[in-house]
Length: 255
Length: 271
Image (cartoon, rainbow over all chains, first blue to last red; front, side, top):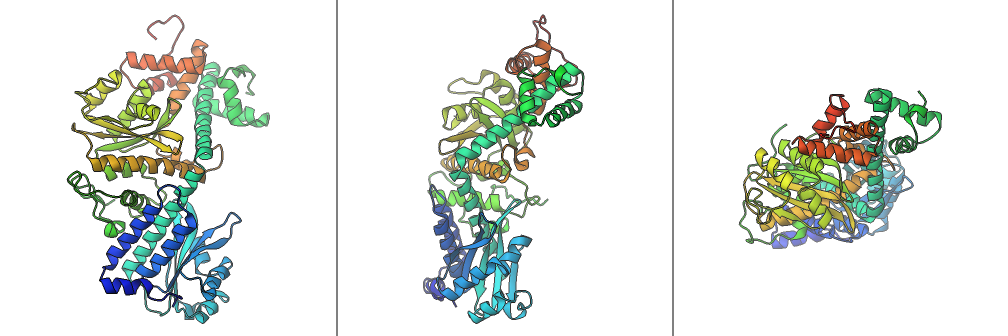
C-alpha cells in the first residue's frame, strides 16, 4: 500500500529468487554498508526499502531516539505524506513508542482493535489504508535506541519466519548504529576508557598503600579512602592518586 | 544451555538461517573469496544473537573464537606498552595466555599492540625466529601450540589486541586470517560502544564484569611500595621480577602479598 507497491516482490517473483536468498543478500548489503564511513540515514533507508522487498509488508520505517529523548523518524520506505505522518504522530503514541518503552516486539496488531489504545494514531493509520501494524525494538544489551515499524495493507498475519527476519534486520541496524557512534567518537571514548581504567588501577594501588601503612584489610582501606574523599569533598580518584603518589600521607587520612 | 555450535564452528541458531554459507575453517583456502561485508555480517549476527546466554551478556571473546574456529581467544586492553588487564578469555588456556603476558610484559598481544599489525606464531615450540623467551615455555607446557594476535584499533586509536591460540601447530588459513582481522576491528568498535553506554570516568559494568583487571596486582603494588618506600611503578617491577624468578604468575604472588604471606624488604636481595 506504499507508493511503490510490490516493487521488490515483483522482481523476486520474476527472477524466482527465493526469499531467503533475498534476505541474505539484504543482510550482506547492510553489512557492506557498515565498512568505513557510512551514512546512517542511507543505511536505514536501505533497510526500510528492503523490509518492504523481503518481508510481506506494505510500508516500513525506522524511528530512533533523538538526543532530546523523543522518537524521530529517520527513514521510511515511502515518502508519501500520509505514511510519513504516521511516523510523526508516533512521537506521542503508537506502536513504536510502546515497543520502544517495553523493549518488546509488537506483532500482528489489528488496527481496527487499536483505537482505544492509540486514539490518535490508529484512525490515521486506518485512513492511510493500513490494516495491521508491527514494531520491533532496536535494542542491544541495556540500550534501546529505536524501533522498526512495519505496516500491512491487509490484516493477514506476518509469518513466523518473517517475524524472526524482521528482528534480525533490526538487530543488524542497531549494531551498525552503535558501532558507527563508537567509531565517530573513538578518540574521546578511548580517552574515557583509559581514564576509567587508570582510575581503577590507582584506587587499587592506594588501597594497598593504606592497607600496609595502617594495618587494615582492603575493604577497610577502601572505606578510609572514601571517607576522606567525602569529608574533604574530593573525588575518590584524586585522593587515591595523592596517596598512591605519596603526595598525601596515610597518617593524615581521616580515620 | 544448549550447544549452539556445530563441530565446524558454525551457528545453528535462528539468525544464521539466512547467512551465506560460511567459508569456515573447514573450507578450502582460496576456494571462495568472501567479501568483507559477509565477514562483518557473520560477526554481527553472532554479536546480535539473543538465543544464547542472558540478555546483556557480552560474549566478545566467544564470538572471536567461534568466528575463526580456533581453540580459544582473549582480549587484552593495553595503554602505551602497558597491559591494563584482560577484558575476557574463553577458557583456562586463554586466561593463562593473558596472565603470562601480564606477568612477563611480553607476548603476542603486547607485540601486536606495539607494532600495530598482526603477530603470528604458527609453531610456538619450533619458531622460525625465537621470541618471547619467558612466555613460550609455560604456554607450551600448558598445551598452547600456536598463537596469533591482532591489534584492536579504530582509525588511529589503539585499544589493545585479540589473541587466538591453537592446540596444534600450523598457520591460519586465509579465511581465518581475514576473519580474525575483521573481528579485531569490530571488537575494538564494540569495546568503545560499550564504554559509550557508561558514564564518563566510570568503567562500564559490561566491561568490568567478566574482565580480569588484576586488581590484586595493583593492591600488592601499593603494599610493596609502602614496604620498600618506593613508587608503585618500581614496586610493580619488583613484583614482576620476583614472579618471573619464582616462575609464578604475578597474580598469585600478588595474592600472597595481599594475604600478608609475603613481604618485601630493602635488604632482602632475593626479592
